[in-house]
Image (cartoon, one colour):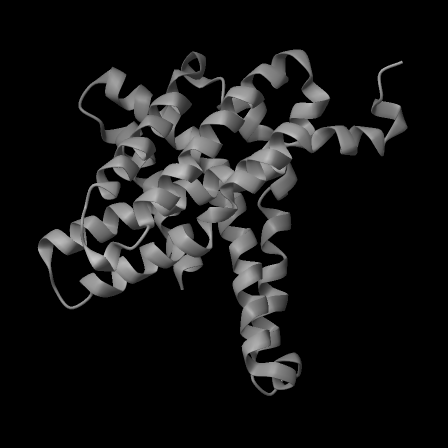
Length: 242
């Protein structure tokens, strides 16, 4: 449920920026929104479709052996979902688009500003002393640090060692998606806490679960981005420099 809601939140954020790109009050506002929509688009496409497959696969697992046959209908969901990462790009191409075309937008200032927003919210949550928040702020903050380090490395690698950058493109997109998804879930949870209502605790619970059980993969993904590429190049002699 947290994976699905995080993917949906990223898509909503992308759609919101696309709307602002058309209907913003000033030309600079519209241009900035268009750039943000462009940056988020490959993340929304790739993460959402990957998550669709993962959640459908979990659905089969929940049903046990019965999930593998047609009686439950779970297998049909997985077959339907499996095409999604293919006809959206494919997702490997979305990752390449993210690092080669979207990171350089606005001279790299756009991605830095977005990451700064993620960091600000994580720091704010770390200061909230409520038991139901758990370690959400700390976990989100560590994922933001991982994304910051991986982004700095990626911007440098695209210019000087492009094959290494390409080798890290897919884990980089996943890292960005986990950071963004955790951010949007946490942002919604904080607003729900302020407003109250019957679904506030559910929003907090899902945001906390995502932060403490899913986005914690961030530092590992950053390590893949920054140091895993050499093993990819080593396995492909045609890419090894003479």
